[in-house]
Length: 107
Image (cartoon, rainbow, N blue to C red):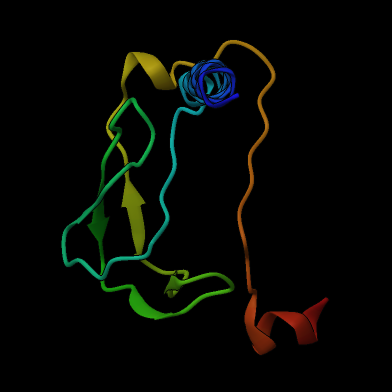
């Protein structure tokens, strides 16, 4: 029985690793914002499209982990143009956004 379980576990892990790798290839940019840095935000995708912090955004508590608060004037994360970011098909973008009380009053 133990050899059968070992074989099934090996096959399951192999299939899972292939599925995870396929998913990672289609992800072209992922910033978790979970580490406070001054200059460079690490892209956690396989493409490593790291971003450079510009301005003085403030680190704070996020929906999950940490977050960056931008002043809507000159704060940004700049990512250099790369081949992996030359998107020519429809894409899905996702972000947690908190517009703040000031913006919510105008909506």
